[in-house]
Image (tube, rainbow, N blue to C red; front, side, top):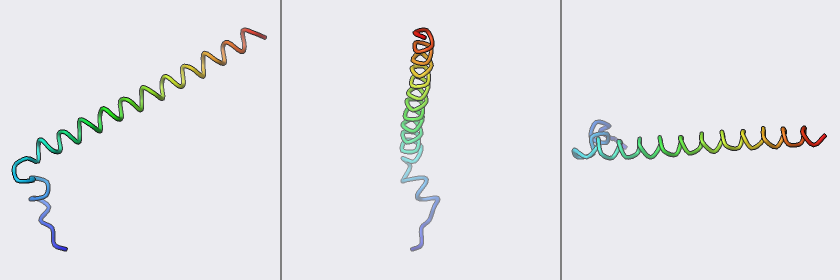
Length: 55
């Protein structure tokens, strides 16, 4: 299979929009994953503090 990669990346002139949309979606998914990870870490810390306060 012989692919002209410059045509693939350019996508008939729509490449910047397509790849920009993919980039924005990837950035939003990454930001959401980081936010969830931070929130989960904070919940674990609060649970640990609560258990320590009870003893």
